[in-house]
Length: 203
Image (cartoon, rainbow, N blue to C red; front, side, top):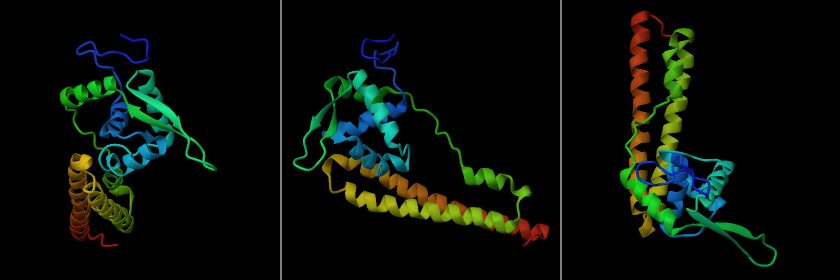
């Protein structure tokens, strides 16, 4: 059922029936700080962006409106002093904390959805030349290594804040994940080189 604040309640537990992206933004507010939309975008890019979502500003503000309408977040305008524009900052409400805690503890574990663009292109290898396929894998390997390095840097930054102990652990997972993606790209290139040798397609 829909409540007066603009969110539907789950028929099972009474929690607002929100998309996962709303819970993700609410989660960013759950670390005890008031944050602007810019802050939320930055924090998302440096944490959730490695494993779930790297949102645009329009997505961030859309979710904040949804959360405010549901009574799970509140905002206020703060004056930044002479010559600076005021800004709107957001905070989680008590109702938001209760709902988020319930979602984090009880939401069903959904299977990961993998949409691997480079693999789709390599699946169509019969339409390409070996040099093109090598290029796809080289680009993917470089991307994976860059993401691994970024995660490594952000792990160190997260460890400076006690409240980010669990985000630091997920960043460590991200570092390992992108290292594995890099290694998988190298392994697949070896597999393809063997195929090309056997088929006499060493172009």
